[in-house]
Image (cartoon, helix red, strand yellow):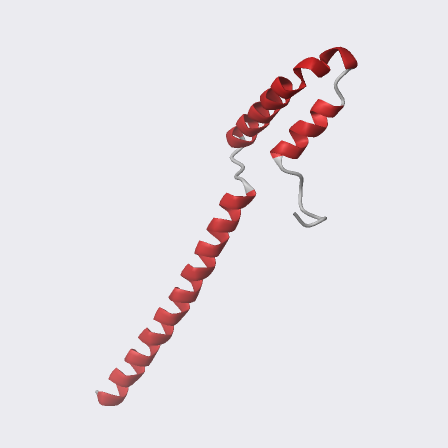
Length: 86
């Protein structure tokens, strides 16, 4: 992960687990799992998506924009040819 990338839910949950008081270290893994689940749930409720989902949608949008530009150019060429023929 690049240095400027935001931390993942796993990293946030691990950081929360690391700051637990000594008496709770025995249940650290369980608490990290709970932290992760709560964070994911709240992000989902807020309408936020994961980085992977965002990147997939970004790629899909770029491909769609490229295809749209190709189709627009093709329509323009066909209209130009029709004007010349008519």
